[in-house]
Length: 313
Image (cartoon, rainbow, N blue to C red; front, side, top):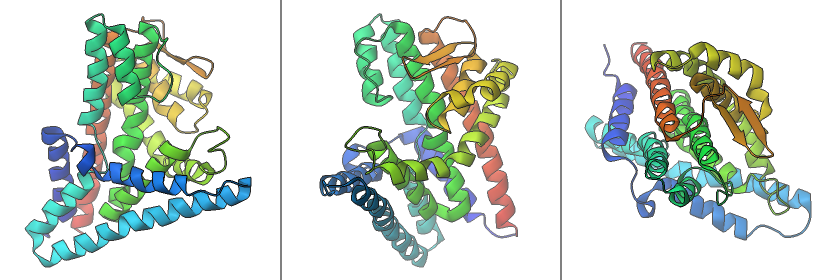
């Protein structure tokens, strides 16, 4: 029986996430990716939609190469220094592509502010950590909804998708996914400045998250039941309402979470996901975090089984 290298890398990366969380931005590779994308955005041509589209596509592809190639070289070098060094280096690199503990901490910071009656603070924390929408005038219910929506959506692109690409293409695959997803987060807007510049990254991100989003939604149904929530409600809401969001992917987990918690999640003038009539409050954020945790746990079990099977081939 061969030593399960990739399974060990996964286990260590998950332990690092749970025990240490995320490094400061100064040392975080995703922040470095953001600097590369920001530099490329500032250098974008000003004239013509299609030149900007071509430039945006080149930026996404070249940037992914620039960020991923050093990872490949670093892993090759680490392998030459022995298996232990390789596992540690690979785990550190893999950890930088996902975060679950950071997502939960961010959501709980909003929850704690709401519990303390600090609505202004909850709005500020939600805008800083979780959502890009204007939160300055949101009610307590809409702040809680924003936190729950962010938890539901980010389970996919913050945890499950990069780990799925780790299964398919190793640590470099997870890094490439993280770059493309970051590119979409920074450029994939429908405003005049980004409409064409970010179109390639936005569409590519839709493609890359197609399978992870649907897999996460299905796991969330079972996770809701395991977490003591409404699994049947999650299933009904997900199948009936997943297409209500502008994103072809985000609606799967957000509608599933709405049904699991028996709440209605709303982004004003954008979408309304009707999973039930229970009042949104700080306590619902905690319940959403439990469902998300159970979803991640189920996926990790599947991923570990797949990596273990590959190791024995």
